[in-house]
Length: 271
Image (cartoon, rainbow, N blue to C red; front, side, top):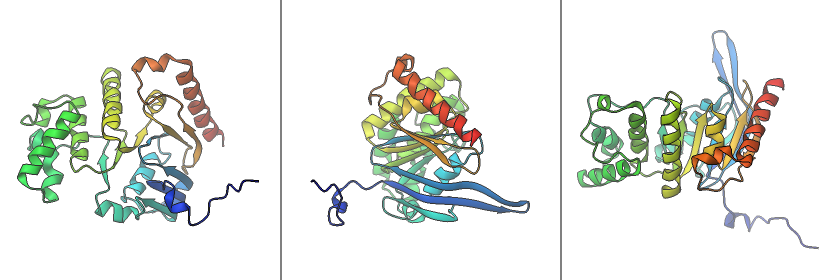
C-alpha cells in the first residue's frame, strides 16, 4: 500500500501559499460595543492565483484585504504573506494596493503620480523613467504621462492607479473593488485589460468585488463570504481557461459557476 502522507522533510519542496490565512478573526471595539467583522477565516492563495472576494456589503471583504495588507490587525488566528507577517510584508513592499478610488494627486501629472512610490523608495531618476514608461505601456496609457488626472476619464484614472501599484514590481497585487464606480462598458473593457495584465505579469492578484459576473470572469478562485461576521461559505476553483474572451460569459460553464456563487451568497444569508 502506498503511503500518501507528506513527511516533514518533503514539505519544504511543496509549493507554499503566497498568502496563508488560518482561523482569522477580527473584532472592532467601538463605543456602541464590539463589531465582529471576520470569524474563523481560512484561505490559501498560491503564486499566480487570481482570487476574487465576493459577498454582501459589510461582510468583511475589504477588511480581509486590509488584513492581508497589514492595514488592519486580526484579533485571532494567523496570517502570512510570502512567509512574513502582513506588517513585515508591507515594510518589504511585497504587494501593490489599488483602492476603490484612483486617489491620484491632481497637482501631479500621470507620470508624476505613477513614479511617486519610486521616488519614496529612492530609485534613480533613470530607473523611475524606465519603470513609469513600462507600466504605462502595460495599462495602455503610453503617451499620457504628461497629462493631469482631471484630463483623463474615470477608467483611465483607474488604469493609472493600477500602473502606480505596479511601478515597484511587487509579486502581489491587492485590488479593492477598483471598477465598482464605472459604467458597465468601461468595466468590461478594464476587466479584459486586467486579465491581459495578469497573463503578462503572472502576478498573484486578490480582488474585491460585488459583481458575480466580474468575479467569475476574472478569477481562478472565487471566495464567497457571508454577512457580518464575515465567514467563507464557499471557495470555488474555476475550470475556465486562462484566456477568456468576454463572450465566455454566455457559456454554460460560466453560467453554472455564477449559479454556484449565487447559491453560496444565499446560503450565507440563510446561515
